[in-house]
Length: 257
Figure 1 (tube, rainbow, N blue to C red):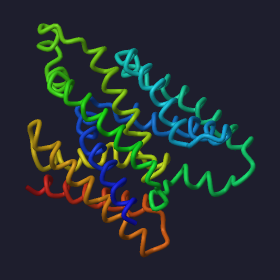
Figure 2: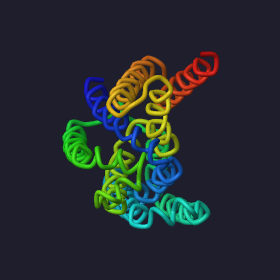
Figure 3: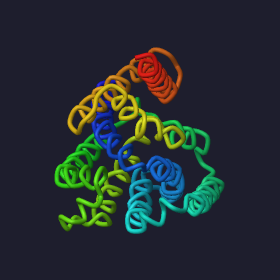
Figure 4: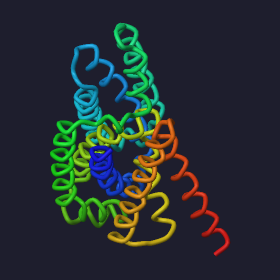
């Protein structure tokens, strides 16, 4: 239980921060695609007797760099992303078909997450990934924000939008791989979008939405871990339910304000 809280907190903090940039850069669909592409990496890694997270991280970094490099084209061609996504999903299901031993348990763990069984070694890995991601975000956060709200001004200051996009997608790829340990591949989208989508309904600016998004993410994951510990239901169910309720409350509040 302690390891679950530590791992959950690390992942929630990263998701809360990265969620803000996913929202302002309008990368919802691309991030959603990365979550599902993780299936191929995870199932391929399991087939090779490697950890699922190793495969997720490897394939997400490759896909993320490609999306970042061709970001402008991707935004104008969601159909292309959909086709690539379905290919990776098909490849992932083929890997799962080849994998016979322990099939059911491994599939469920990959699809819906299983943070209650996290090990100390996995926590060390999460800490390392979190430190790297936060360090990279610290460097690119300000120019990334400026290029998102005023790309013309950013270009006049010689800010390379393509390089920023590639670096951001590296952060997103790592975050997706981490978040899959909590909510699984199917619902990773909830932690990548939900916290910031809620936070931006309440506060504006740069720092305030990030802080509130991170707080929402952490409290949601904590609540989900506690609920999943006492009730034999996947943690992803509780997390997505809480995020959905908070978002609906936020939208209703703004509508009648």
